Amino acid sequence: MTAPQRNLRRGQLCALAAMAIWGTNYIIGRELRDALTPGTISAFRALVAGVPVGLWTLGTGRWPAESRRFLGPLVGLGLLGIVASQYLTYLALHWSTATNVIILSAGSPLVNAVITILVGAAPFSPGLFRGLLISVAGAFLVTAFGGSAGPARIQADPGALLVVASMVTWGFYNLGVQRLSLALSPLVVSSGAMLAGFPFLLAVVAIEHPPHLWASIAAHLPVLLYLAIGPSAIAYASWSVAVRDLGADYAMLFNNLLPVIGMILGGLILHERVTIVQVAASALIIAGIMAAFRSIPSMPADRPPSSRGLEAAPDGAGRATASAPARTRS
Image: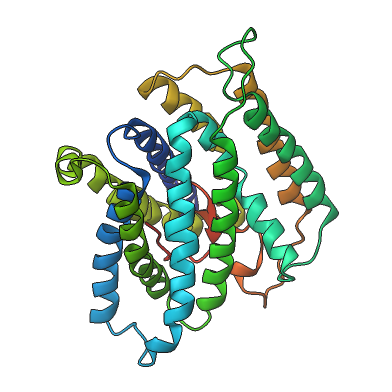
């Protein structure tokens, strides 16, 4: 096997590994819904993932000398991406199945692209609009009928709207990260947003006032550590290799596997039933992403990679973020 073939195979395996690990975030969030509150899970992840990275960036001199002027933007990013987006995702898993949440989240690259166009950071594309309409049809199926147990019991999915809100807040977070990364290292931006969002998550936990908080954390400590290390570190390392070996365009195609991974993991681990609604919705969302993806013109050589709406890396919840491979998120 030649070196390019080895690199291609390695990139494909790393992309698959990253998607599988990110898929487990939803499965675990659903499994923990009755044991830990959404605020508790989000705060633990932000603390465990943010502090080591923050200390490392400080120790290596990556923090700017005039870091105080970036405090406001970092707090804003923390509220959008670390508090609102993560909290809404885990809250959605209280009412929605993990499979439905993963299916909806697969459309996050389109949400990011639309937000980028709305703020004037990218040109409008008719193909993107057509792809968005197709994916919205799939999202509507999950939202309107995703709670159905069968054809005799049609029921809406109450957590679906929370997932959509989470994707929107993450889209604005991603846009802010792209802009702030022009002045700061992506690692500084990510760790700073996590640490800035952590005090607000503590306030959320205080409002939730969960009973037996420390006992619940201790009982589920291995799983919580996995959430902080697996989706936040190991998956990102794998994704960085995939983007390097395959290129961002090819690597992002693996995001379309999220609905399939969700149905497999949901069925095997949580014994969630795969319905015709989920299969149809997955097909529509994937078709919409593919249609939109093909419509985006090739990026000029002098244009930064993060300027493209769909040229991105999924976040710890399996969503698209800017394509800088070093970026991490709790």
